[in-house]
Length: 305
Length: 305
Image (tube, each protein chain N blue to C red):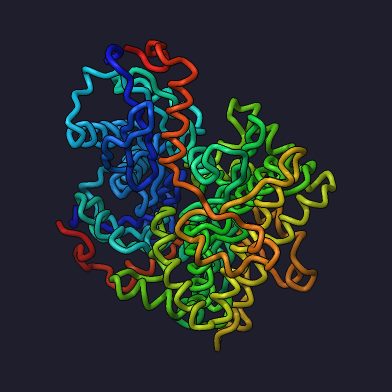
């Protein structure tokens, strides 16, 4: 596994699925593979299985035998910053001759700016901001749900459920939004007032498209919720740019909610947003190339052999 | 288990422990017993074990053999309103000749007003209001954390953590409260910014005494948080009293946070609060007596034999 010519591996692992790409050190794409969820804080064993599956698929598609190559990998993984998660993941058998793990926010930022300095805010189920400038990194938000991730999909769904609950027990007036949430949950066979007991971030996030649809139809309360999410993005951006050296960075708005929330940002912020140059997996592959170029002949050192 | 003279059983089952009381139909206390957690939505099997343990303790202390008596029980259990929880609990072997299950909020209200009409708001880890008037019941709040239970201990702890997170990543200024939360979590060996990942309601609630201590010392931000919790109590009370027939009910403020939050209520609301006449287990026992008196010779009907 540590011998032979190098093959670069870029990995993007999120809470829903893992993507993996193989390329030559010269940058030629060899193949890609996919696997299941790869949040190493939620389930390190599942993440390892997902990545192994993606690796085997990609190797098979490329017609390569992993044993004949030295696989130099960088993975951007959800949950990488949670204490102990990386150690639990690395306690499994080594898949790569060399593996560096960073957060998926980091690879997203590297990919969005093609390795140059820049900032990004990722608005998906969660919400996190990250900026890289001159080798330094700043992270804002994304501390998990419900304590953080304000403005993300889970947060939007949670706020919609709260409006429904308050309307349902008489603490607030019923509204178009509260009744739409109630009807959706009832249609799914749930008792709406009890549906959220034990619900997780992804469950709440499933209600966000309903909020977005109502907002598109002009509902003021739904638009107000999305405007609050937009304000959270602006707060993240302001905090990212507050430090010396970070003030003038270009910023990309990424994630599934980017097109939805962008219109709720102030005109100045919207005009200042950059178009992403790549995805998280591009960032991971770029970092794998740097890792290889820094030590082209280095044996494995990040994982037990 | 269904023969012999009747013994009344009152049960108060919460997320932390179960209490059980035995009495004669004439009202003479026989014994009490205790068991572990008894939230039937969280873990119906554990709740059953806890209640069986409390029953065996109480029978042993009273010098009774359960087989020689007809045990007529009412249990006020946390989680009773959650779909399917009661069925899962009742699928276990029957412990009583007759068993009625209601929510712990209901027995709390019955106990607080000694079976007469009244309202109560219970401020503990959660926050729920319930009122009984002329056979009708109204419930407000208490829909679970984080979507509900606004103003309760878990909510207060969550809000304190959010202030700490925003101060920690530059979205807000550091304050006495944010630094106190950070120091507490660091003292416990946690990385403060990541501590809340996967934390549950009870974990957040453990931070509430810290907020209360700072509030007592005059910290404006901590006092502001408790004032918001007080406003939630007033909103619950207003919603409870909004319906016809419920407007003039006496109201008790119950739960561990009652003495802490009472000073944050408006003078008029404070002056209008009643002193509780009993606890949830008193309410459960009162309901067990009613159940027995309504059908003194009825065989078991609420559980499979």
